[in-house]
Each structure stands twice: as structure tokens, then as C-alpha cells.
Image 1: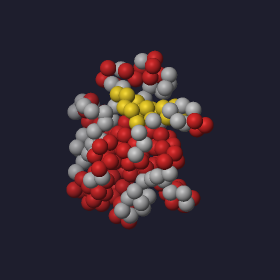
Image 2 (image 1 turned 60 degrees about the vertical axis):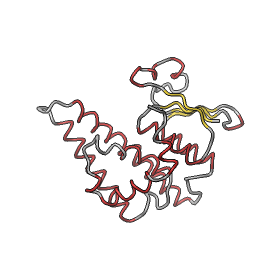
Image 3 (image 1 turned 90 degrees about the horizontal axis):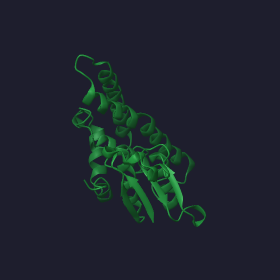
Image 4 (image 1 turned 45 degrees about the horizontal axis):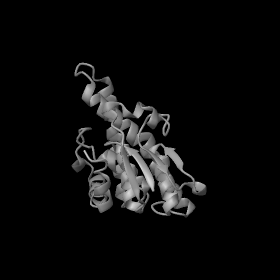
Length: 206
């Protein structure tokens, strides 16, 4: 059993999608960011960085409970534990890892900043908004080029796609038209049609 500490954010939904895909049993523990529950001592004992998601694997290495935070690390751990969505072949494995790192270092933080500045930047102070919107466009172009050469980010469906999808699912919030990136749209529709993805995107409820 996996205890999943999460909220209704792209990073949180990466892990719920992964758990749905691999079929491991899990229990959801919502951490309401709007109520600052991530700063409560009970959660800080699990993740001292006060961010979601985090997991506790009740049957971790050596049969002991194992706590893990950072969404990319959690995806890699669950892929290794289940033997799914991460190739064994070295070249294919690092293809997945590089696109996972692309999401962790680019798509997530840069698009997240775009969301922040589009919501909060005054119209007469456009620097932050324009800077991160320009970077968002660049990232979409990288994704579109890659997805014009392969059906998924690492050729076959993997944790790289799972990590990236929930961020692209907020395309309206970062004022992007998927129709302008036909390969991204084709990929987005294919990933979004998966039943595990549909279920994972609804966790936690509300």
C-alpha cells in the first residue's frame, strides 16, 4: 500500500496518474495548499521541503516503510518498484530520464512561473509575464518538434509523458492554443484518452 500525500496540482497528479497506470493500491491523503496544510508538522515529518506530492510506501525496500518526496524521484521509484513505464535497456532508459528532467527543469518551473505572472503581474509591469510566456512558447516548440519525430517523448509511453501531461493540461491557464502545436495536440489527446490518466487527473476529488 502506498500513502499518497497530494493536492490538485500538476505535480500532484503526476503521481496519481502513475499509481493508476501501474495498478498499485494506494490511499490518498489530501494536503490542502490553500489552507497551508503543507506546513503542518505531520506533513513536514514526511516532506521537510513542505511541497506535494510525497509518498510513504508501507512495503518499501527491505519490507520497511519508505518515505519519498519530489515528483520525479517518486515516478522513478514507482517505475522501478513495478517494473513498468521505464525501459531496462540503458539507451532507452536514459531517453526517458532526459525527457523527465526536461519536464522537471523546464516545463514545470517555467510554465508554473507563467501561470503566476499571468495571474498577478500588473499590465504596466509586463517583464515577468513576457519573459516566462516567451519561455513557454520555446518549450512548446521543443515538445512539438520531438513529438513530430516520435509518438511519445521517449518513443514509448513512459513516466516522461506522465510527468509532462498534467502541465500541458493547463494550457488555457498559460494562454496557449494547442492547435498551434499539432504534434503536441496529437500527443495530448492520446495521453488524455488513457483511462488511468482520466482517473489520475481526478485525484484528489475537488
